[in-house]
Structure formats: C-alpha cells, structure tokens
Length: 448
Image (cartoon, rainbow, N blue to C red; front, side):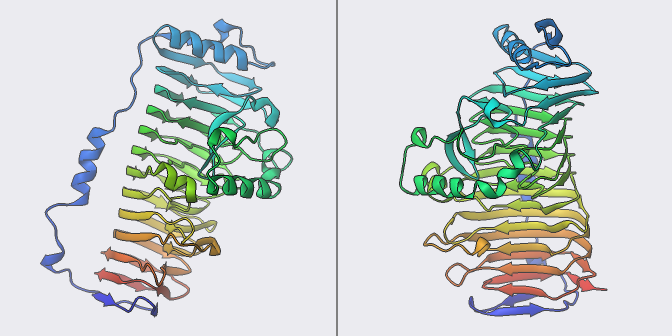
C-alpha cells in the first residue's frame, strides 16, 4: 500500500488493511548485510595481562580514594597498560577520574564507586559538551580526552549520588547559563573562552570519553547520574555491552553517542528519566561548525523500561545522523513514551537518514510507537532538517496512544518511510501524519 500526499496535507489513519508485498520491494542489497559488515569493522580495545589493585596505591574504604585510584590508572598507563581493579566494597571518590590509554578500569562484583555530588570537586575545567555545544566546564566524573584503548568494565556500580539537592536542582536554574552558551556558539566565541564551571549551573554527564578511539563500557550498573549517563563524544569504535542504567533524574539519558563513528550498543538494560538511547551530533551553530555526524551505529538485544524514548535520533543532531541499525529489542512500560523517535527542528537542522529497525517487541508506550517530529520544542530557523530512508520491519506493539506520529515541515517533508510486516494493536487514537511526502505500508496491521 503506497500513500502519497501533498507535502502540506494532513492525514489521520484509523485502520490499515493487510497488503501484499510485491517482488519489487525486495532488494539483494539488504541493509542488514551492511550491518553485518559494520559489526566486523568495530574494533574494541585489548589490554595487556597486567593488574593494578587500587589498594596497592593506598585506597581505603571509608575515605576519599580518588587520588589512589588515579595513581593506579597512571601506573597502569605508564607500564604499557592493563587492568586497574576496584575490589568489593564502597569507595568514595571526591572528584573526577580521568582514564588514560591502554587502561581498563574494572569494578569487581560488589564494588561501588560513590562520586561526590559537590560540583566544586570537579575542577579544574575541561573541554566537554553541554547538550551538544562545546565549552569549558566541570569535569565529568569519569572522563577521558584523546585517549586510545580505554575501558570501564566489571559487575560493580558507579553512583553519581545526584539528587534534588545537588546536580538535579540545577535543571531549571541552569537554563540561563545554557542559553548563554548557545548564544556564544552562535556568535562564534572560541571554545576556550566559553568558560563556565564555578558560579554557573551547568550539569555534567557521568561517563564521557572525548575524542577517543577504541572504547569499551561493559557490565557496570549506573545510578543517579548528574545528567546524561554514558556519553562518548567524537569517538571511533565504541562498544557498550551488558550495562544496566537505573537513573531517573532530569535528562538522565541512558547512552548518548555524539558525533561518533562505529558504535555497538548491545545487551543493555535502560530504566531512565529521559531517552534510553539518544544518538546526537551537536547543536545549532556548534554542530554545524564541527560537521561530524554520528554514523554506523548498531543497537541490538537491549531492554528499555521507563524513558522518553527507546531508541532516539536527535534532537541535538545538527551534524547529521546516518546508518543506524536497531534490532531485537524489547520496550515496555507505561512510563516509556515512545519506542522509536526522531526529533529536530529548523533551528537545529541536520539530516537523519538510513534508519533500519527490525524485530522490536513493544508492550506498552504512552505516546507513539514511531514518532518523527521536525517541529521539536517549537524552535524555528532557516536550517530545515531532512529525514529520509526509515525502514521498520516486524515491529509489534500491544498498547499505545498512536501507532504513528509523523510531523514533518512544509519546507522539508519527511521522505521514504517504510513499514513492513508490522502489527500495532491497542492504539487509543489514530495515527497522525502531516507534511510527509511518502509512506509505504506493506503487510501492516492495526487492530484490537
């Protein structure tokens, strides 16, 4: 079934009949063949067989162990690499840990790193990003800058201890500072002069490798993040595997690769206060200045519970996003708003293309199974975003408000959305489709 409309039209869909798939829709060049090739290209780090226990560097439970852990990281790096072991116990960390090349920071089962929630412990300033804009700000609690072969692994817990009396309290109070930063970027102020930190209220992301290569985050549990939980930026070859994120603070996105190339996110569990996975590439003028897309990303075998969206592209995506593959995920919670979500606006611009989704089981979402919104946040400008080549196959849902919510722009209608062998049940309302150039529905059912 092929539905064509003028780009300014609005279409409400209540029910869809079953439709036959023609031979013309089958392609020998499957996107999933390309995903298999990509999987072989992603290079996770490898480490020498050396062990550095933090207790050998005077780390003790009951006191601040930051200096001892950082000393162990330095010793491991200086020796040519290996594993820094955090043994079972609670370890207080009053400030940031900076990972170095060839170091795997490994948390044994029963080990917890409890980070200070006093922002002043995270000075001096480092180069970082706040919602897609570069600045000099407090250091993320776990940070790496221009390192290679780094890892954060194990069965332990990292706890940011953020709450409504510390980092999270800045959610509303930091709005003016965030607007100041965006204005600086729009005016071309050099990043080195965008100095925030003390006296400002700009939260940090919990784990942030910045301009790094060959990054592994595996097995850990993340609690009470100041803001976004896992946030690789401008990185290549990133693997996030078997991670559990339980963090319900404001903007506590689970995993946000920004302007990264070759990323694998698999076998993770997300229960978050914002998007579970959100793929980004910079905001407004700053994203266009760096012009580095997020691309070649695989998400598979993940479970999503609470959150604003299961797998999300945007909204800070001015540098573009392309070649994203999502498969074999389960998404189910009355507090999960959407399953697949794409969001931008004409101030942010950018492009979203080549999104392939298959074999997704959606139990319940409170909004739409697929939501594409190019009028996000009601911001307007002259950089019209482009969305094209979106394919959903074998996506099923049991309960939602809308099956589809597709909102393009008259100046830039959504292009090339295909749904194949999908089954959407229990929708309270019809789909909403506006400013969409073309939607193909092949063996799609919407029913009780």
